[in-house]
Image 1 (cartoon, rainbow, N blue to C red):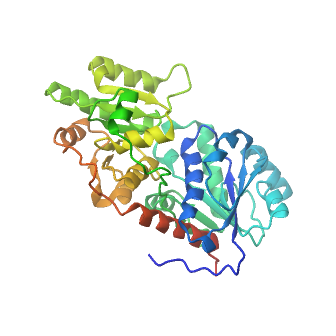
Image 2: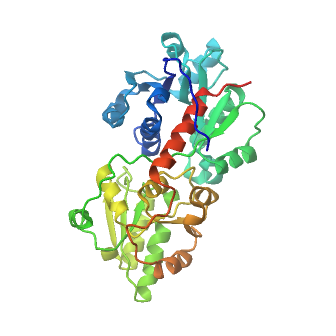
Image 3: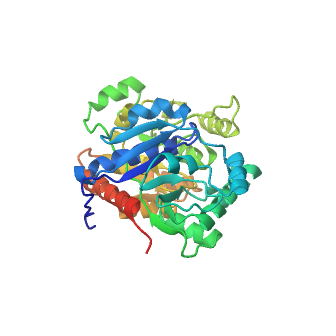
Length: 389
């Protein structure tokens, strides 16, 4: 990839970053934190000045933003429905109108809401993670589906630039919506930044969480589409053949006191008597989660759907092998370095696990970390600077 050549004439590019996702959506929160950290891998003269506009309930994450040229500004963002109605009535995009008046920014990213077209010199860049609601509508309420479709139609009609997480997501957009010359689409492959590459004795992290010497890791929130069940069924099948494997699970558990999905998970564990082969850790510190991943035999990513997997990116940055469901996006993300199975076939996964080789922690599976992250930073800079002809 060519290096980005930028002459800022001693004036840094000014980029507004909107940090306004739901506090429950860790994927979005990690995406923004990681995006800003990625820019650290640019040469100093190339680094843009960041204006981080954050919701009050996300203030607790501000210390995660390690970047030398950043301004952190608390901001009131209008709700989607009322903001959309006000925008249509006033013919002004109230989601960004005040920002554009108060700050002279070269670009703003990521904007989800474009009820009307905005005339401005500031580059307004949208981002959409995936079209999961089109593939698995049963995971969403009718109101959520309607809201997503409306937001996407506004984006496609009124914005000039859109960032998508993968070519697979772009294929979905072309399948379900009409995309013309507007918006101009950029693909940005998220790359995980690992703050602390210092390894610790694997024995210490295993003792802390009561893990065996060898284990496989699932690091997903406990949502149905994350598909933990196929992994549990696979190790249950292996147990019947006399082979016992251990699975460690990190990730947010459902907030509701009763979850049909968790009941299904616990039923599989009880019915197959694999309680001693599964460790559910819930949400743990990022540093501990990284160490647990670093010392695992492999990461298993069994999802039924992904836009671009943060977990896979973490594994790639740590040089940890990945066994993934055979989604097109997972294959796009891992290429020949991944092992794949049908997310609906526990026997297929069991076959991979049964003969999976013991891991040498020194083995390299992917492009070197520094090179991957620098390329990601250069892609972001090109997106922020790109001008339509």
